[in-house]
Image (cartoon, rainbow, N blue to C red; front, side):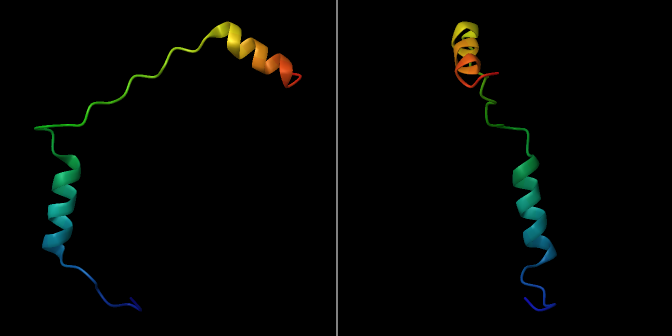
Amino acid sequence: MGGQLCTSVEALQRFFDRQTRTDNPRPVPKPMPADRNQVERELAALGL
């Protein structure tokens, strides 16, 4: 705050280590397949 450090280099290192670890990564959700007909209807309703 106001030019002062609010954390330590060690704390930042622990944070980034947790963010980039690969031993137990979170699964990436798969995108839902779009219903083409529904998409076409919604676009037509919008005048596109």
